Length: 300
Image (cartoon, rainbow, N blue to C red):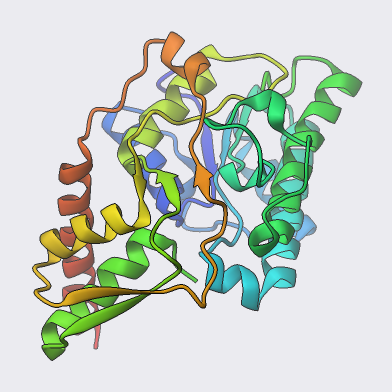
């Protein structure tokens, strides 16, 4: 991408979107549409079209759409599905209508079938039933993938050659338990489910690389981080937070998919590797959480 290119990060306030914006600024991209302070309501087609007419972005990262952990997906599947369907459809259509050079649509590992072979590889998409606890959200993300592919087939390559999640929830829960002096923290599930984790700034680097160098019709997995059990993750967070109590897992609540790790050989073949160790990422995440608490105190 040219350093003076007009770039729009849809969902620039999200965890991934804000990391992409930080990376773009750090690399010297000076014409970020998000910095105008007039981001549209992405669920409103008229606002999105007007925004694209006004700013004429040349490159778009789609990191928008509500998301959450198992609890949020179980409580509000319609809200999550509708928001992701609308934001995806509106941004993808506007990108085509206004001549965007390239669009990177970020889907989710939830898009893979529950029983897909591990690590999750792109050919496994749509080969079996989804994990029931996040099915609605996953269907919306799959729809975004398919809409990108449909635009490519119809119009050619000029368009797109291409409540909290577990860590945030556990950091918050253990920090609050530490302050109260609790003897234990109760966590959902058995602790045996395994997940792949990637630091958000590393993911932002991967996004910039992929938008620049990947132009195939098939989706590409953005992974390469460690795969840990939820129990191992919780123990790591307990160490970082300094919570001295014990962890108790409540198997009455669901684990979700037994294993979720991505087969990311295509990304790794582009020369990308994560730069942040898992321990460093956890420490940075906790410091960010502590800073957010200070900011709340100042605002109040």
